[in-house]
Image 1 (cartoon, rainbow, N blue to C red):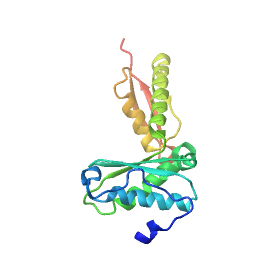
Image 2: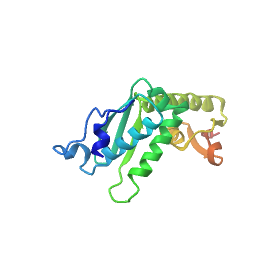
Image 3: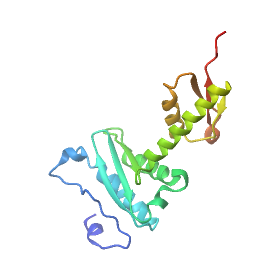
Image 4: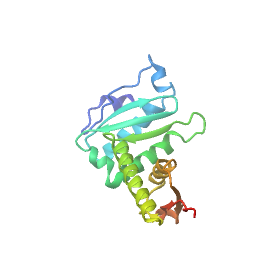
Length: 181
């Protein structure tokens, strides 16, 4: 491990906030944040990407923020690469049940901007469902995106939501409330 850190490498990543034993509360003292950052560093090095990784952590979750010239390639098409990296790192860091911490990988607040766009689209489609009085079916999307839409429309008056379909073809239906009379 130490020889790995001392050798300069092309495209090497640098942690903006290195793990320190002096402040264990910052990373809950379990080393998972550092492990997650090291795994991500190795993966992006294998992908030959020029990025940096910053760690933000609390007792429940670890956030790794990827920045740099190749951060767009880390995001991938519709966030697919970001989701795949996040899935892999969560599986690797949390392979033992004790002390599980959710790892979130983001790049330049991509996830927040993506979620804001989903919420905006969902509200527009909900208004359309209410005004036309018919069910609006959205495009197929992954579980995370469906959850964002379900949550955003949970308190939207006049509609309910339901997922329909199987696997990668699963989509949300926005259903207007039945009018009485």
